Length: 250
Image (cartoon, rainbow, N blue to C red; front, side, top):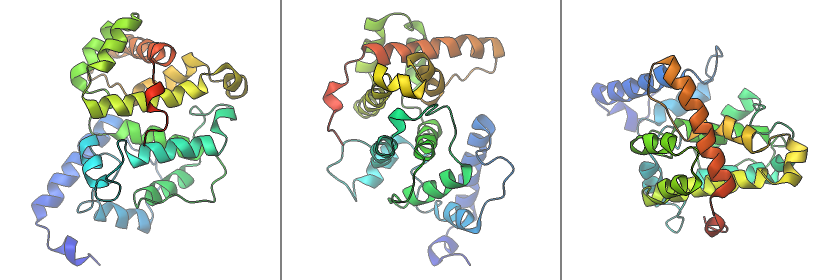
């Protein structure tokens, strides 16, 4: 049965919400394969119409909603908590981290809890929060690096100074979120961790670039060429960007 809050909504509200979701699915594809959603997931999706999800929203919307719970936080709670969870479960010493997907049922279950600002204490596989973290970045309404900066990024994929300059010119929230993201990846890029994960800076850039840069061309040749540039740009940031200022930042 629909909640009273949902039942009062005009049909146009549902239509607009579903249209936005269909547009995203058309671009990114389905996230659950052929598996049918659980009743809990259906209920959660319905409630997301009146209570926006932490997934698929704009960074500004997430921070506005978060300000009611954590007004002192400068970064998205979901970003920090999932990143710390990956490390706490030994992700920096787990072979194939970010490349090996977590169990899809566990990832979806974790997503439901995170959307209620909760984290379970019974997870043991770091691939689960790692997969959900990638999903959070990938599903942002606007990428961490906004589309208006995309051409600059792929134009400076070989120039560290120019690439860093692009980062410094981002809107403040995007800059903080991106620098936290890069600082997190720099942990995994350390040789002592690479020896365990088998995920060097090139591997990290390859699996993570699509989560912060989005090519909007439909031309396969352009997509292929830009993918290489996106990876190179992210690799430059992992190697050269000074992110020491975000340590301890929440």
